[in-house]
Length: 597
Image (cartoon, rainbow, N blue to C red):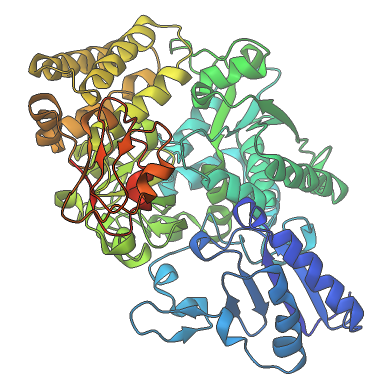
């Protein structure tokens, strides 16, 4: 095997890929070939580094130099300066926003300092399409250990003692789930990996599959050995082409190396994995709906019991865990239950991966120990709110979660604390909002999403959520009444208590949390017909200040409705009957003469 002087790691995750990281890698390879450096330098398309705000990212090893915001044309200077002359390219280094100093090592960046990468341990460090690099980082050690030294019961006990809980949202103890499935006898059992990541703005599972697919393959095999299953199925949404490609490569390589298939590692244990594709239905994240979809039926949930551990895929005992849950399993086996249980809080062990998005400086993928506060995540790792604006709220748990406010900033991130605060962990979406966000409109957005994604099987979800959405739509259009707010609460309570599955039972959370924490905004919409954030167009009007307006005509020229009139060099006015509130005039005016009321 060639020994290279430099490895150039180029982020190959979907986010950076969409910003031409693949073109950067191609250009680097072209220059390396032109300068005959193939024996000294290797370019690797790695998984996600996490710091998406600063992508595309290029990392030079072994000196651990971290370049941000790299463009294809920067490939020439990276080779010429760093590789050939051994000098760092300063203009591509990260600049600390406080000290204004250039930082070349990611360990000294605020974004990474409070993180602890367990599920993401290999993302950004390896070529995810090369099994040998995964093995060099410890892949399949856990599988080898359980097959050679442990009984299935012992393996389950390690997972139980670790305190690992399901990372898909519900937080059910993983070891207990395995144990329940193991106790049911059958001629065939199944291990299912739920890779149907459907929360708006969430990309945790996708990034793990793209950056470290062998961790999922290994974990599913360990689970299969533990519960007595010989077949694994990954249910993945078809919108994840890169994750699908890398999983397919990983499965093929694992078979080639004797880590999947018949008589794995000479142990007598058989296990293999297939991919099944979903069409992107949010409800199919619920395990029974997911199973029905894999069987070729409509993706609708069913009442439990029976649980999938008793009667799941093809009516056989089935264990379902999501991607992040599985990603933790191999390292728990190799490092031990006590090591994992020492991380996190009393009832929430280990770490949690979050997709940090919204009005925050450091958008990206992060992993922190359970118990880390919202304040640390938003202001230390996240770098605070964009454009110096004020923090207003953070939505955790996606459409199933709730909006938390300033008073919740010191809330530790764990399953129980978030529920007590009126939200939930969910799969890991975390959307930060500032004062330009209207909380009534936010609740309406999430409820609209839920209405569209509901399978329609039960009337509380199918009809109740539609009624709630109609009330919110009325309020945002200035047609709401105070009694509508009480009706929202009543509907939300009924839906939570009577909906069939987790989608319906948690769908009122965004409405209830915004009612609790932003009651005054609802009242403003209903009583004063005002949206303080200027988001609800029906409650907005644009006005031209006759003193500030110089009559340049720039606003009238961009108005698509010819709603602005006035003589040249004379103050203009807006016909509110014609105005569609598009905001084009407001953006065009250079003199601050147009305001939103």
